[in-house]
Length: 188
Figure 1 (cartoon, rainbow, N blue to C red):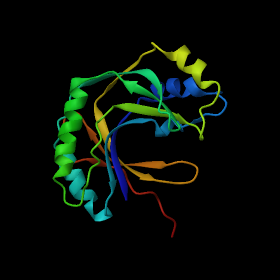
Figure 2: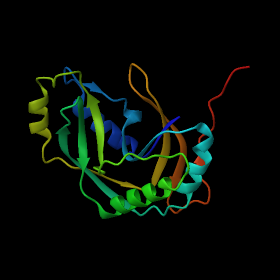
Figure 3: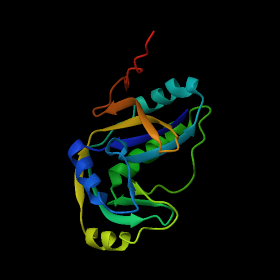
């Protein structure tokens, strides 16, 4: 099971950000429901480790977060996204989360520096011709929002793109137990 923690975006902001790349030939926009800001990429874990991971996250105090997506960027590796304005409360939450997750047996966190961003679209090997004008047009724009929760997500990699599923949601003020998403209905 491949896991990560992330901040969800309000629906209105998802629609607004999704419109930024609409109609840009050569870009493959992410589905709106997939837009998020990753906090910690946990990676592959045994499904039996899900409960200890949820317990480690359950006691985290979620500060009030006032976030701003700005600085549109091209990763140069097939992704277009928005960087977040530096926010000390977000950085503290992410560090505390890493510390707690690092104590869970079987969890091996990646070691690269945290750069909060959200990916809007992907493109194949070469950047599309319209990317330069799009970047220039959107520089200086800011997309603010407030957040009082984060989620623990599983990610299933597929040829057409990753499929994310909310496994548990953690809401401010700290909840004693995570709100679990019910399993999908199965037919008998």
